[in-house]
Amino acid sequence: MRISAHRRFTHAAIAGVTVVMLGLASQAHARSDISPYVEVQQILDFDLDGNDPFNDDVVTYTTIAAGVDAVVVSRRIEIGASYRYERRIGWDDSIADDDVHSGVVRARANVTRGLSLEAGALAARARTEIGGDGLGSLTGDNDNSTQIYSVFGGPTLSTRAGPLDIGAAYRIGYTHVEDNFAANTDPNQAPVDYVDHSTYHLATANIGMAPGETLPFGWIVSGGYEREDASQLDQRYEAYYGRVDVTIPVTPTLALVGGVGYEDIEISQRDVLVDATGNPILDGNGRFQSDPNSPRLLAYDVDGFIYDGGILWRPNPRFELSARVGHRYDTTIYYGYLTYQASSSSTLQANVYNEISSFGRGTTNTLAGLPTSFTVGRNGFGQFNGCAFGENDNAGGCFDTGFASLNAANFRSRGGSIVWTGGRGPWSYGVGAGYQNRRYLTPTTAANFSLDRVTDEAFSLQASLGRTLSPNSSIDGNLYATWFDSGIPGESDVFSTGGSATYSVGLYRGLSAQATAGVFANDVEGEETDWLGTLLFGVRYGF
Picture (tube, rainbow, N blue to C red):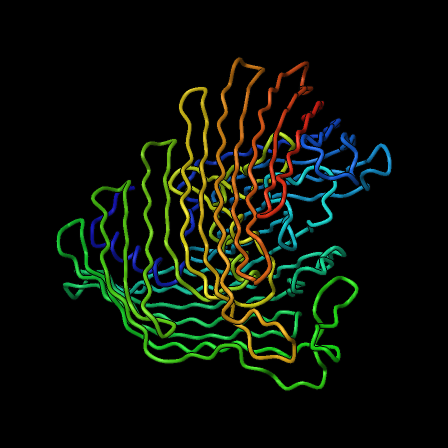
């Protein structure tokens, strides 16, 4: 539905303030597609370089998997889901039996006019410390990986009272990283605390008026409150803000936007339990422990006026650009976004951000920003590659830069991402790239090493390309590359890359077979590159 220029400006301004951009179920056609499946695979991993004398050259294991891909859309409910469980069974002692959960679920229920409930869930794997494999190569036995779970839910209100637009939202999120007994076991690396679990609350409210209703400019008053309580070192993040924004149309497609407000952010935690030499005393899972007798320590405390200004440009209903510069966190900040729907089947989204974040809040907000209609990126081995590619006017999002490090500390996060997804005829494609720079915020503790002001960087690239060859056969390819620089003295850069190709063919009434070949590389600076080749032969039955 095409809307007037002033209406477009107002809606974009509200989305920019509340950082909530979600597709509406009412705009989608009703449909239901639920596709469960079971699968048996035989996998062979080959050490292509022989650098590790403690591992066999060939590792063989079997996976038994069950999963479901589903899209349900009605007038009141919209659900998208892609979930997979697999049990890995080693043929000998070279690989341990293991359970792997991966997938994404996003749901929206329209309760009444203007009131909806949003919810989502995530299961994925990631590395716990430097030197591990990235999201794209978690085949075989990976001591340096662990399971991640995240869920969120809450109501969203969007309504009108006369000329006023009124909105409010609340969500609660919970993120958990499973234990990993290999964490912090390298005596040559400084121990770094990693995430256990955290609970996150976010509440926002706004009221505003579109340009041309009673005034030649639009305005919006908004406020928000955030709190995250993390189990590690009893960390607490608390923030609130209030601000006024205005939208001044210059032409029917261009507007000036700006705002001013006040915010207060405080991060605190307990001290680290250390031994006589100042080394952290780790628990059985490699995590830090709190000193029960310590007072709360302040990691970050800033309050004061915030302001920003920029442009909002929408030359047509398929293109929108917002760019702002301002003052926040006691420094100059830049941020913005771009959305472009090139066709009914091709969408490009990009954003630049600058914020105070943590692993738990970042994961929850990425999950909440996904559309309810998406395709989860998986390579030929069934592994979640960190991206969910959307449909229509939402290109989706990626988790992979956030998963590059599971450090428990809060951090100043600056970076950007771009997602491009689409298809034409028998072809389908998706590309996602992201960069993140994190400067950690921790107080002075009794430990002899602190992450405070340590900066790490992560870059990731994911790409997929598929083609339907016939009504019952297809070929798909996936590529990925990740680079991570921890910034911790003595630790090295890690570069991981790889790709896979899969051929699938239908056999008979829901029964299909596939063959996949992949090559992966993990390069730790100063060490020999580890090369891994993987072959898979599998059979799937879809119900």
